[in-house]
Length: 424
Image 1 (cartoon, rainbow, N blue to C red):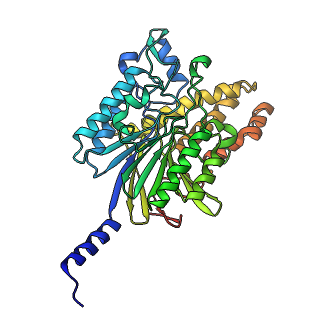
Image 2 (cartoon, helix red, strand yellow):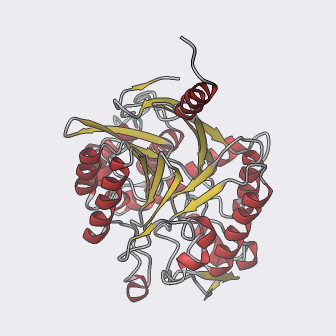
Image 3 (spheres, rainbow, N blue to C red):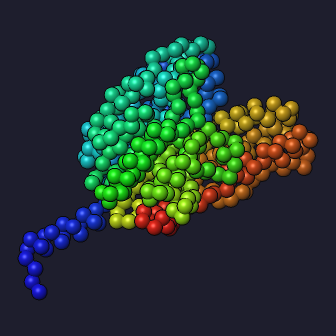
């Protein structure tokens, strides 16, 4: 049988459309810090001593990341929050300029979608550091965020949630994104510090429900992005750090399962980790992306072709030894933090230091992703009673951080229809 040319053209067009490949990048937790705010002195060094971020290197890291992105054939970029160190206006301006440069100079002019993190808005800890003092600087307000970043999601949103900074866009007719504002910033000024925990307002969940219903009617795949985690990423995270997981995560997971929303892209915890959980017979994925300013400075390259989503890990390096430098920087910072906690229990440093070091090394393993299993744990045979108590009471942290919850974290394929996954 002979078919008219118009039919053959239509068949080719539909077949091509069904096999269309869409590629994008996910990068999170820039924590950009301008050197104009001070990079020396006792005050700044005290901040770094109690922190794990490569703040001094943040401008170079975002430039190196942009240089990498320029070489990739991508259509859009997702950034799930914590754009700045602490919401400083000068840092937001630098991030916005960098994203505009990327958007305007990349051969594909990729669309870029952002959402705020817990550090980004109404933050009274927006400081300039001078010698041994800190000085408040202007910060970005939640009221101004949508207009400030209008070119990066808000201007092209087909729907905005009236109770939060959440919005929805149509990336293509068959691929939609709901960017969810999970941060709690309303009480920051009163508390005089940013709130770490997150939640979605009931009104936001109702709004998302309507977006998902419409997407299903139009046969569109709906992706989600938010700052806070949906599922536990290591055994014990809910106990040690509940504030890094969404407070009302069960409600969101139930909504996702009901509408067949397969995954959410998250950040916040600075680890390159993916966790899958079955909710009401639906396999759901929390795809967490690490921070550019924390070892190993990763981002994700995603490719959707037909039913299959391929996820790969890329890392940024500023020099030949940068990866090991950043790993040791992380371990050193977290060892100090852990040791402070251990000392409160009256544990002498001769016992506390090896415990703190293993906690820090555990975090480094978890941040990198694809933990191979518990390979180190402090030898308590010659330790005192208090140290042995700490290991009995908190040893789950060291073991849990070295335990990889399925699926693989760095390289993965997910069937968006069935929820099945496979190794690359």
